[in-house]
Each structure stands twice: as structure tokens, then as C-alpha cells.
Amino acid sequence: MLNKPLFKFALSALALATLSACGLLAPRDTAYSRPALTLPAANTTDAASTAATAQNLRSWWKGFGDPVLDALLDEATQNNQDLALAVARLDEARASLAQTNSSLYPTVDLNAGVSRRRASENAASFSPGAQAISEDRQLGLTASYEFDFWGRYARADDAARARLLAQSAAQGSVLTALYANVAQSYFALRALDTQSTLAETTLATRQDNLRLQKRRFEGGVVGELDLRQAEAEAASVQATLQQVRQSRANAETALAVLLGRQPADIVRPVLARGSDLSALYAAQQVPAGLQSDLLAARPDIVAAEQNLIAANADIGQARAAYFPRLSLTANVGQQSKDLSTLFDPASLFWNLIGNLTQPIFRAGAIDALVSAANARQKQALAQYTQTVQNAFRDVHDAMNNVEASRQIADTTAQRITALQKTLHLAELRYQAGYTSQLEVLSAQRDLLQAQSGLIDVQRNQLAAVVSLYKALGGGWDGAPANAVAAR
Image (cartoon, rainbow, N blue to C red):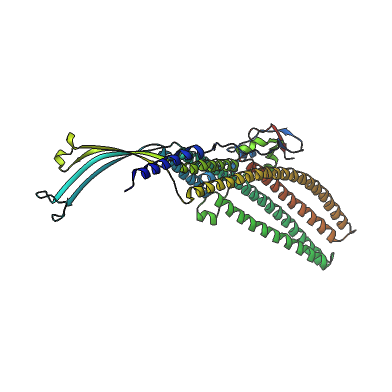
């Protein structure tokens, strides 16, 4: 048995350890403050400006004036599985917050029990004349509560709340990406439709020329070389048309998957067409000046910052393990060996238990938890900083691509005009006998290449505008009312 001096010494040591922990290891201030990053005042482009209306996440694409595009985006919102997965994850985070928040409140349980026992009549504790078989019935309530002096549960609640907001922002990222992917896939499909129309028109022209050359060859007007060149040119355009049709079929399947359609509809997709590529290209607009604070609402930046807030709160939660934990437990109810007397006043029982636990030795376990929390906070900080850096890079690249594509489109249009005149002159020279058919075919190829290139440039311009929408996290609502319009 522990003697009194030793007992007093142990008690004093425990009290001293507790006070030392409270005074020296109290949780430092873990209040969150946003990391300081040097941000540009604005992202601008040097292009000429015209009046425009900024769009936002929910209606940005309506500026194209294409009801089919509107309907496709609505369909994707209803059926896309990536979005359904994000919604389910958000529901899970919301449930986790509710579970964590419940720790801030007392727990109350209803207890009911019946026991039947038989004691050994040969046991030393058995009293002569006592009943060997006994029964006991009990009905009562148990309540317990742990005082959150050091903010352990409060920090856990802060962390869960921040993770809920992060998951909500992640859903916004999925939605923004979904809108961008559907729009880009639709623009790609309309570009392939335009390529197909160009190839069909060109093939018809080449086939007409081939029939003409056959007649001229049969009449002895031209040699076999001209005939074979016409055949080769028609076959080349025919192969191009087949490749375009193949790419268009794949694009339709990819878009059907984004729309969340059933497998049978993916294999044989039926997709409506709206505005043609040139109309979509003419309708797109981009603000000339974009303030850097627009990126603060970008979903992935919001999610990264909320994860940093949660990691910061986790540090406070981990540090709270250094300090005493005080809990109270209360029981009240009725207990009786007979059911008939269970609710008599004499059957009332209650007890109140207070418990104080101060960690003394954990072999470094608490230190490891705090170190791990600090490491996760540093990871979250690095991820947040990297997310902001990538956001500005995305906006810069998208703005650069928008302007570059517009300039390339203008130059390509000028080249097409010049090539059309070149082809006309080549045909006149060939008909007059000043040159061979090879010059005409060369001019035709150059013109077809330029026309096909213009379609690709217009598609790239639309894709860059969508990339800018995505880079800004869903549009540029609040940007200056100046825009770069397609020419």
C-alpha cells in the first residue's frame, strides 16, 4: 500500500504536470490568415474593344444564341455521372459535418435491462436462507458530456465545415469543367460538320473536273497525264472526306458520353445541330480587361483555401490532446427485483461521475499527431499556392490563345481571298493553253488547305474562349464592359 508521503508526492507531481501543461503547452493561436501572394492588378489584351455583356457560370454560353447548345448543357447537368459523383461527395461531406458537430453536445441514452442470475449455494459469499436465483429490472437514462476547454471539438467542427465548403467548391469545379467540355465538344462537332461540307463540295467539283478530263482525253484534247492527275485529286479529296466523317462519328460518341446518355444512345448517337461554325465564331466575345480578384471565386482556388483552413484547424485539434480532458457522466432511473415495484419511489437510483484525464506519458504519440498535422498544413499551403499559380497561368494562356487565334483567322481569311484570285487566274491560263493542269491543281490544293485551316482556327478560337471561361472559374461576371469580339 502506498504510504502517505509517497502518495502526497505523487499527487503533487500530477498537479504540477497539469499546471505546467496548461501554462507552457497551451494551444498557440491557430487562427487562419490567407497566405500573402503577389498578384497582378489585371490581365489585359491589346486588341480593339467593343461593347459587350459579361456572362456568368449559369448563362455564359447563352451569348452564342444557340438553343441547341443550351439544351445540350441542360441535358449534361441532369445526367452527367461526374457531376452526380460530385453531388454524392458533397452529401457525404455534409453528413460528416453533422456528425462532427454532434460532439459539441451531450449524449443521452435510454437504458432498459432485465437480468436473471443463480448464485452458487456453496460459495463463501452465499448467505444461508437467501434465494439462489434472483432477478433484476432496470430502466433509466445515461447522459455524458465532455467539456471542450481547449477547443478540440470546436477545431474539429471548423475543419469539417471547411472541408464541406471545399467539397462544395469541388462540385463547382466539376460543373465548370462539364460546361466547358460540352461546349468545346459541340464546337468541335460543328467544325467537323463544316469540314465535311467543304470536303463534299470540293469532291463534287473534283469529280466534275474528272468527267471533263475524261471527255477531253477521249477526244484527244489532253494527254493521259491530265486525266490521271484529275483522278488522283478526286481520290485525295474522297479520302479526306472519309477521315472527316470518321472523326465526326467519334466526336458524336464523346459528346453523348458527356451528356450522360444510355449505352445504346452512345453507340448510335442522335445529336441535334444548331448554329453553324461561322455564326458561333461571330458571336463569341471576351472582355478586354480582367481583374485578378475574379480568380478568388474560381472553384479550385476556393477548394484549396478551404482545405488549407481545415488543415490549420487540424493543428489546433491535435494540440488539444496535450491538455486535460474533463467529462461528466450521470445516470438516473428505476431499479427493482420485481416488476411491480419498479416505479416505486424507493426504486429510484442515480449517480454522477466526474472524470479528469491528463496525459503524462504517450511515448511521443501526441507529438507525432501534432507533427503530422503541421506537415499536412504545409502540404495544403503548397497546394493552395500552386493552385493560384496555375490559375494565373491558365488565364494568361487562354487570353494569349484567344488573341493569337483571332489574328491567325484574320490572316488566313486574307490568304483565302488571294488564293481564290490565284485559282481564277490559273484556270484562265490553263484554258488559254499557257500552262498545264498542274498549276490549276496546285492552286486548288492551296485554297482547300487554307479553307480547311480557317475552320480549324475558328474552332481553336472558340476552344480558347471556353478555356478562358474555365480558367476564370465559370465566366467573367463583373469584368469591365469592354470586349474583344471576333472579326
